[in-house]
Image (cartoon, rainbow, N blue to C red):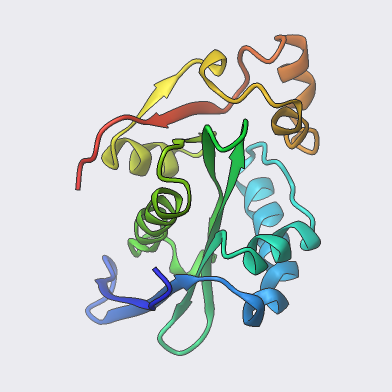
Length: 195
C-alpha cells in the first residue's frame, strides 16, 4: 500500500484524460493539513451538510501514523484525502474525512480514494469491522458499490470518544436529543467484497 497508485480516469465533460497519484500520506504531506481542513469545511458549507470538523493537528497525526490517503493530480496539485480511525480496541475502524478538491469532482477520484482507504483499513486492522458515517449522496453511492450497507447507530462503536468526534458538527444537538440513536448521517458498514 505504500506504493503510489496511478490511474487514468476519463473526464465526463472533456475529451482528455486526467491521471492521479493516490498514496498513503506521510510526514512529507503534513503541510497540506490546513488546506484539507479548510476544504472540508468549505465543501460542507457549500453543500449544506453537517461535518465533524477536524483540527490541523489531528489530520497531521493521521498522516504521521500512516492512517490517511492523499491524492494529487499528475501535475502535482492536491486533489483529495481520506483517513481511518480505529475504535473500541480495534474492533471497528472508520473510513472518514473523504474530500475531493472541487476542480476534480466528477472524475472518479472519490471512488479511487475510497477503494484505497478501504484497502488501508483492511491492511492495518484486518479483523476490524469497517464503517463510515456520511450525509453525502455521492459517498453513500460509492459505499454501496463497495459492499457497505446501512446499519443502525446501535451497531457502531460504543467508545464515548467516537461520539465526541461529532461535537463540531452542526447537527450534534440533534444526535444528543435522539440519544445517539439517529441523526442526519447514514451509518454504513462493510458487509461483502464487491470488487
